[in-house]
Image (cartoon, rainbow, N blue to C red; front, side, top):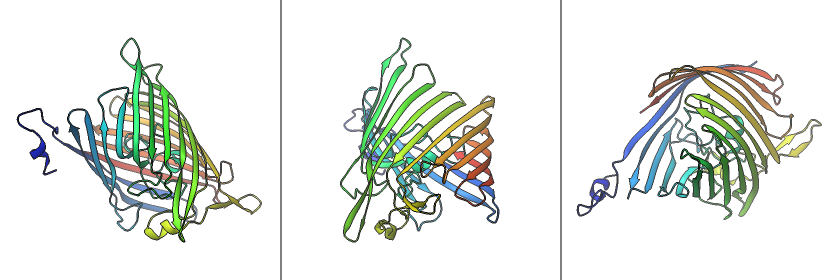
Length: 361
């Protein structure tokens, strides 16, 4: 950053660097869970993010973003770099991005944690798009390291694009980690926008997640797809996505260096008590966020189902309702009640009350 003023202008020509913009947000929450024999309640600093963004030579956009959320001893919670990329944006129909950034998979994954509107991203997106991924990958906020092409084209009479595409090649190991098996993930999607505010699309993901253990590389192939639809106008959001995954996962979540050497494959117990290879998973969510008072008060509801075995054996369903109140564009409070039905528990049902305060700067 100290070099920016030096490089900003050369011999009176057009500035090489635009003035950098600093921004970010912070989220604090209170959560109370009412579960037989396992009640809990706590205040929490959910996360704090800061980012720097700007332009180089007009056509190149860059962004660097970091995150802090408490514990520094694990991969999942330590301060870390989440975004670091440069994107060539000369043409609407072809943009090229290189670095670490969001995977082009699902509509919800690229959304800001505040804007998605609920206490967390939906279960299918969290488990199948690289947040708390079912493979055992460290928490990667839906991101990876790679190269992506994307664009919008086919304008209608009003100048609005009707088609969008995005496709990229990635390491497949999540953020801040080199490739392990020398294979790359191919992830992409496309959608049509027949009317203003409406998107209907599909996504695909072919790749692997790997670990080294005992001098050998264990690579688990991953095959995923998503079907998505969304209508968004101002504060009104209607969105649903179905995600399916075929591919095994490791039993241990990668949180410290030693975990990266554990290549034990995760299994589950079926209805007859047999250990079965956990090869498939799927999930679906549907949500509505509806403005009650324009630009101030929003009511919301979400149905959120995740099946870690693509069956009802360990299915987990959240039924959520709540209100979001925006004091101004920099300050918002979100409230929520969630009834969870978890088939993996002896007593399936429990409740959660959640309140979140978000500040943008």
